[in-house]
Amino acid sequence: MGRGVSSCGWLVVVPMACLAWGCAKPKELPKPSLPRVTVAHPITRELTEESEFGGWLAASASVDVRARVRGHIDKVHFKDGDLVTKGQSLFTLDPRPFQSQIDQSKAQIRAFEAQKVAAEKDVARYTALIQSGGATKQQLEKAEADVKVYDAQVAAQTEVMREQQLNLEFSEVTSPIDGRISKAMLTEGNLVNAGGSDPLLTNVVAISPIYVYFNVDERTLQRWQKLLSAEPGGKPTAERPTVREQKIPIHFGLDTDEGVPHEAVLDFADNQIDPATGTVEARGVIDNQDRKFLPGERVNVRIGIGKPYQGLLVPESAILSDQEKKYVLVLGKDNIVLRRDIKPGRLLDDGYRVVLANDGEPLTPADWIITLGLQRARVNDPVEPLDADGQAVGGGSTTPAAKPASEK
Image (tube, rainbow, N blue to C red):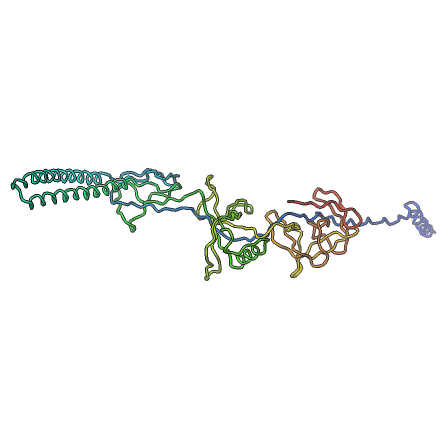
């Protein structure tokens, strides 16, 4: 009996619990948010087609300093690496041997002059005696010849002395140009021999101006010539101004530079193409008064080809690859992601890539392209676009597009 009541009690408890708690309705799941991406407009900029070459810097003048006379070095007048000026004394050789030779020549000249005076007196005496028969004609002629001999000896010894004076001047070795000097190869006490095979004393290189050398390939050269001929009023090659007269600007940068921030002026191109390399050597010149550049440094050189034009640019980070094709993702109607195939051009120093052409619908400055969050975007799916400041923007026909940026 008690067992039956217990069972009935459980039957009553369970429905009561259901009434007490109530039957909860399932909650609705929130709608998934759209992937957020950063978008921007392509920009337009005035561009010029450029060619890029590897180049190097070279001194506009370089002189190996050698002694022109034989002697011992008495003094070195510079410190290694100094800036020197033209005519500045670099080395002093012992001047005493050269001065001694000059003194000997002076004494010899005085002896010849004294003999010449004696010969001139003989000429005067024989001239007076020959009329009275006190001297013969032969004696007079010999005295006259002696005058000429001593006169020639004076002149010859005078020239010897001038050469000796030059040697004395050459004992002071001076800088032939303005520039920066290398180290002293020989120091005080060393014997210096004159001649091209003798040891080098030092080297001086000019630091301003400085040259920028680079090699232009034959194909680029022909392209330049074609563009010049195609210009209105283009003249035949023989009638055009020289490279120096045209003052064509070139830009270059060191390995540590961002891009090519330095400008030089093209002033030389060789007169023939090297058949071994298919290139022609060209040269630009730049002032280097601030001594920023050193001869021998490697540089990247860019030179413009043709006239400026308005180019369309997109960030390099916005370009994707699909096998052999390049493309960008753009916003269509209702912020639907669309693919736009492009033909990319050269990469600029600020990270923008030139768009040369489109395969299909053209890309315009009014389009929104996805620049960040590309991995979250799917073609034909919607996204939530934001600008660089994190503000919401719209694409396609649902939201008016902002005015595209333009740079010059």
